[in-house]
Amino acid sequence: MPRPAAMTASPAHFTAPLGGAVSQWFQFWAGWFENVGQIGLINIELGHTANPALEQKILSEVASYGRQLGRISEALEVLLDRNEAAGVLDPAKLDPADRRTLEEFRSLLSEIKRVKGRDG
Image (cartoon, rainbow, N blue to C red; front, side, top):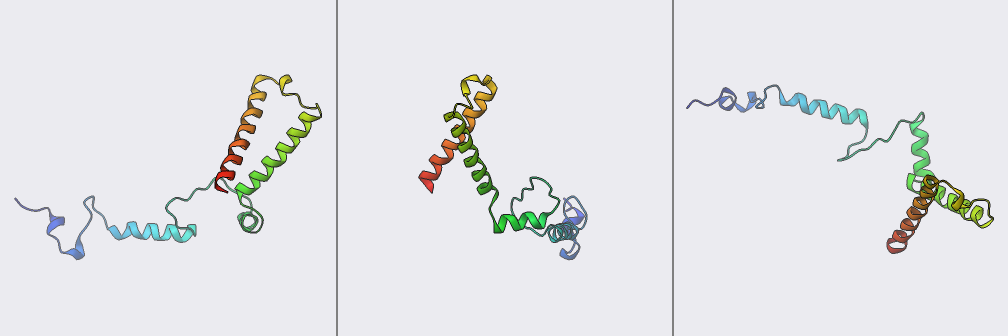
């Protein structure tokens, strides 16, 4: 049984089973990584910003996204607690969807505190 031409060709002229120069594939990826400036197994971009350099500076010099969200959550919890204590906010008077939203938020904060206490 004769071998396919690609299998009998010298190594210098070998092509992939689907044909074409394999080096083009590597050139594409090398160029893409140069333009991206980041190489990683998983890179996630959650959106675009008008000033990426400023956003990166804030993340490296001020606080990560997690820390920023944590501070916002803590501040919101203080406002909720104080307004409920003062009688300004009565969860019983909220419609069910709004009440459920607040309950889920407080449950989320409770779980975060639990994990921080256990792992932090």
